[in-house]
Length: 530
Image (spheres, helix red, strand yellow):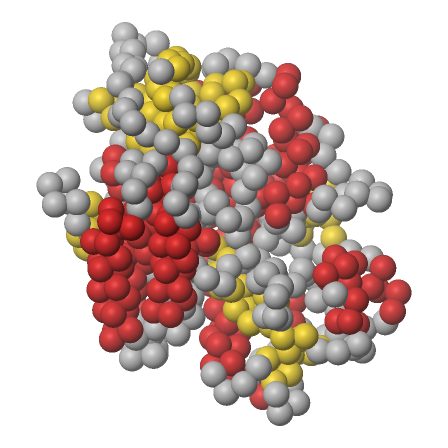
């Protein structure tokens, strides 16, 4: 067994994790950065490389109001304010790092090197990863974390397995979860294939609650063409673009929506997703770019679409919703601290910033700011100077990395179909109950289906089943429609009853999920928080 001791352990190598590692290292800590795949894998690298921060035109107060309105007022205002207050400083720090950053319209963009085809998201990731070579950071790719270690109420590290089959035990004075979301638990998604909710089930097993897991954001305009993956159509959308149905009707006009597709796709993704989901019950829906001038196809973002299929210049192409982002997750405070001392979290694995509906461009904004906040907080905690020392724990024996029989992949496909059918854009109580029952049946079959008990693949599928139940249980509990959660049996928003959070915990004895509620933070309770 490989044993490692460090000040700060960061689990996840997306933008949030890299920012956390760089920040903790800069503050004088030794850092271990772990990724279950390569350091360049994950959603950050396939992102559009754009984010929204307050500007001279969009003041911090107006930014906060916009985020709260978009999130249907269920956001944690305290967390939104952190991003609003730190955005300007973060922009300058990124420029100081030498990242190719420009401001266009209402957001900041990473600019690709001329001739590069790796995409703006990967340009951002590579630019940040280049900085870890100058710091005291040990990078451990291809190590899957299987358990968080908590001693006497305090995080003390994690245990995992490397791709070579070597057990790894990492003792740390502070731990940061930055594992991303769970979009790949759905059949139609635009996520990296490894986004299976690892951080969520690690948090539940460690005793943390998950909050607002019913709020899963669908990007309304993802490719729905035969034999093509559900890749989102990159913004900004040309002015000449239209959404049409099989009858040739302009969908935006039909439903009384503004003609500015970019505005709708940023602030009203929930509404547009619902409209397209309903339209697709009647027939196909198309994005029509045939009136877009020819020279526009030689520039981003249309250049990428042209490479996918040049024919899209001359005919409308089929689109539809695909899972894009999980807005629920681990609860943190303004210092990225969880309920467990020494355990911090940042990025999509957390809840609170986005409420019931995320503003376009705010995913990377959250990752950049709270990655830095988590790194600062974890470093301060690690350097407190008390006598406590993290202890290494023995690794479970007999574990393996792969899925030799292919059964894990088969079960995962069943989970993806189950989630798309029962926890998609349109939900109701009967379907959700069927989905929960189906997940429980699949869980009971799991050990019989997969012979490699305890393998990384088995662990991922078992964890994915738990998170699929969490999403459906939370969706069933919230008897209203708000943001990304649309219940056709409760089609209206009900602030009198449901202006609160749905919370799930794992019962330590039965390992079942227990559902409860918690109130929104008020201005007074925010002031009382440490």
